Image (cartoon, rainbow, N blue to C red; front, side, top):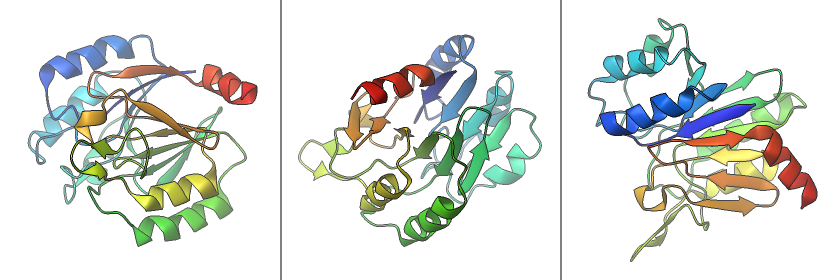
Length: 206
């Protein structure tokens, strides 16, 4: 299965056109949040996602916090809000956790991680967060150092996802890293095609 992942396009039409074109060769689209600019045009953007005619899994970023994302998604055929929930496909499970910004700890995520660990299916797991994990290639900003969230590291350690997709840090668009066997990707606003089967093979080799 091929996933098109993207993040933080902030209603930029040029970036969305890139996503739209790449979505033609993907089985599923995943957005790691900040698809608006401070919540503006949220309905219009979600309708654009819906017209991709593929399952579009989203989580809110810090720009969508407080917006009625779930209510809007319920009115759409193809857009699913994965925030704080598990979505199961034939091939893998998805756990999403959106919002957040520069907080180093998130007690709610740690509590939720324990519940997810107890209930998750025995399938490869893809985790989607808006903020990045701490101390990695995807959370380092010049002059400020590592600004990621340590509770995401905890979730990775406990849940051992095959893949973690994240965003928020614009300076690390398109960067990758690895924690344990978990591959970490900030796909950036123009989108990145990820072949899940190839990821499985890569991890088995290592």
